[in-house]
Image 1: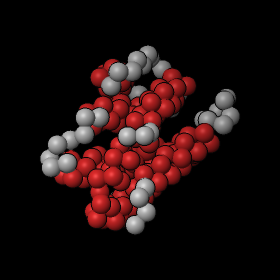
Image 2: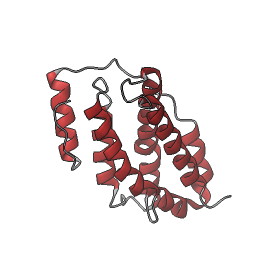
Image 3: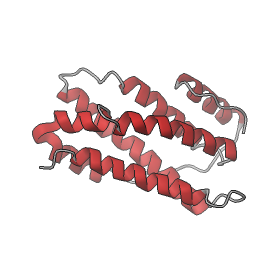
Image 4: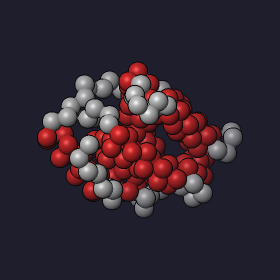
Length: 167
């Protein structure tokens, strides 16, 4: 078993998602909605893998004790998921990029979520990796720019420590 298999798998998914976001915004005057929709669905799947598989697995491996950074990661996930609800605008995209830049360091960096999981997993690594690979695609709802959605976006970003103005 390779020591960093879980970290490698999830970091590769980060790179794939980063590529989709770059493709969606390659032309500054136009958002490629096909690429953005793939990014949106992929990011929601990735968040689901971490929330439903990885964080619970780490907590079990730690005898029921969650990782100290789990609270911050979950707040970031909530902010990101909320930002995927409205139609993408420059403000929405800037907020997503800012959160991902900080969030991905917490996951991929030395001592981060992924390295910790690989270190703790031992014989469970293959099972965890198989579950991550088998995570289903996520169906997404149509975008909504309602005042309630925008309030949710602002509140979720604020809870996670990020500011978000009106798009």
